[in-house]
Length: 123
Length: 123
Image (cartoon, each protein chain N blue to C red):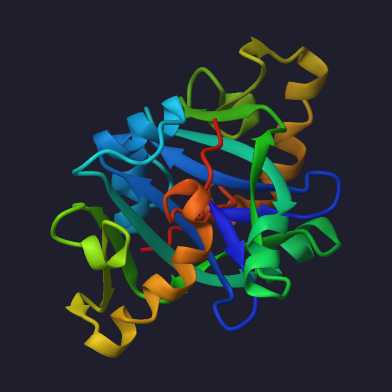
């Protein structure tokens, strides 16, 4: 889970298939073939209701979904050109165009020390 | 999911058993007998790593677990004195003492319009 500031301005959850979660839990790097990591996100909005109830700024909650749904799929051969990861992005269930997808790897490659995965595991 | 400010200062997820999630999705109130809602939380910490990578304040992430694990269990007869909900709080797997539990209902009863449940469902 995380809150992203700036133009993203969301609250998000990172999900993994069994292969990815097992690797996360064991701290295994690089992630094994077949790992899939997904990111879902909602607008980050103050809860006027909670703030009123508690009489102070108290809560930011999940509003409507935003920023699409993203995937990383580990296949070292198929995606050799982008560090072994295939990147996916869907808006309203439709795949984003190539220009969007080409924006993934340049940022993720900054985190080569953890196999291009920003999110750390929190037990 | 939510971020709570002030003394809580956490990022949290709200989970439900099948009965509770079904009621959430259908917008059904009050929650049916047998509904169980759980709250887990982690410390809300800035990601120095991400901020450095992007060159700006960018991410708040989940640090170590904090604020225990909480439950609400719907049993209108057993918990008639507290709006039909039993409240539970565990720190490191151990149940909190009675004084902590008695602090739950006074706040939750502020939200009678939604059967004492603060969290709204975000699709």
